[in-house]
Image (tube, rainbow, N blue to C red):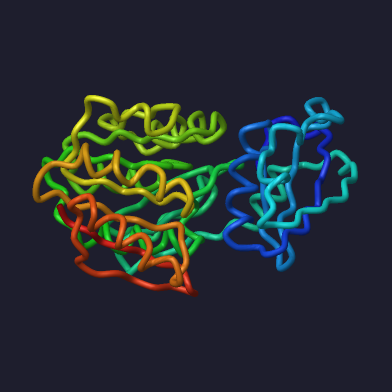
Length: 282
């Protein structure tokens, strides 16, 4: 978490989710849509944070997953004292290095002088490189040939993958995220890295109408992938590549089967702590 205003008061919701998967991801996505700004997956569910000024008795009424029969969700809430989120974030954020080629660091870290030096200030956005899925996507992008390709980064979070795609030679990159906080954060990070060919967009798959790409990155949760794979496939050019992540090993066959039914063929996959990074080709 990172805020320039240090005296904002937050409400912490501690959700108990049974079973946690895939429902943790669904819950976080829906909470983000109603104003929650930060999330932490726990062994039993999700801790979520919302500004006290935005919290009210009906704040969870539009969180549909709370009503699903397939999952049990309970919660407790408490007020968090005013906190210097900048200091907390700086204390807990450490630079990461992927394959000795790419470093993802904050502005207050010194550069190691690697081939790809990405500076991000993640605030509340997903995509610091620490999560297994982002790490695998970076591994792929370091090996893929992106020169002069039109690239889509779907669910772009901080913009770190879009930034790396640009650094790897992409002609243009559309970075799309449905979360306003991510959209604003990605704009800042693109500018921070002096990238001029990344187009940051706010929205979902509806932004893809009429667009085509040579290369697509879709690091989102399982349910959104299952819903939107047909649209991704339709806007991917022939012989194009698509990278999927955001789901677990047990979901791989389901994702691959849906992809194959839309003309996307299995090439390979990576695994990290039960998370999957999948490469498909049209």
